[in-house]
Length: 379
Image 1: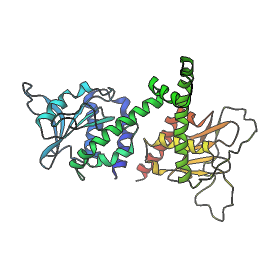
Image 2: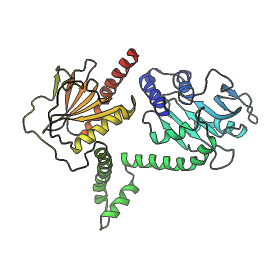
Image 3: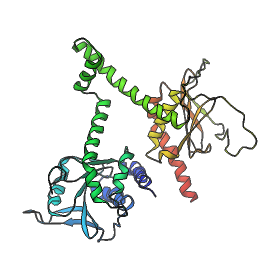
Image 4: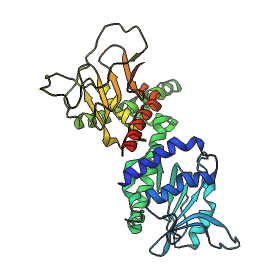
């Protein structure tokens, strides 16, 4: 399995089991050890590779223990300190890592609660662990751009020099991305003033600032969606301008359950298929992107495909009509999201915009998990 698949497998496990984990020890057994073993590839039962309860005397502190020390090439290379999964990570949690980092050969320290993994090194001062991580892997929202660097810390591809050389850039890029994400979610006063001053020629009064407190996040969201949509249009081979087809027919019910068979366009149907003129709209592309973002905790996004029809935009697992994830019924005045239960029965929910798809995230993830469970059983 690739590093991406291994990470997503663990992310799925964390999402499913997180609520049942109540202690630090349970977190280590359920999530941290699988990360060390399945993701990084170290044998957690071989003390020459993984040393649990690693002890090293630090000054006047005697007998202190770190949760795990990972050994590569006969030397301790990575230290791991774990907290319980329900507890957000804080710099205060890393006091033991700070002390151990200075008295071992380790150049990488990991602070984790089983869901978020913070990787530290000594960029600011030699043999002194930095106060800020150079890499943050959050299994609740995996950043795939970080996985090639994570792969360099695996047993089979261990390349510490390359990781350290890239750590400075990773550290600041990561901090910038997190700062940008925070500004998009809840713009700071400085952020609002900056953009207001760029587009508003008069003095930015308190009343004007209040207007821009609404306009700035709205513009940022639209800009990001437009960038994503352009990329998806290219991926779907639909770079031309699109026109939304609408229907003015009234839709009396807000939620409708449909028991019709899902395989209305079977993959193995014989005979020529009729030629249809299908137009993919911006809203459909945005909805597709949102569904992919939601279910990436269950499966690699490469397995999530789209098929547009005259009546709805279908989102499928493995481009297979027998594995529907969702249908976007957007070619009408009232938009609907179609979701599926374990029997592949579709339920349509009225929504106002593609963003409302997020309110059905659990159902979408459950649909994908059901298909993956059947694959496992068949295997």
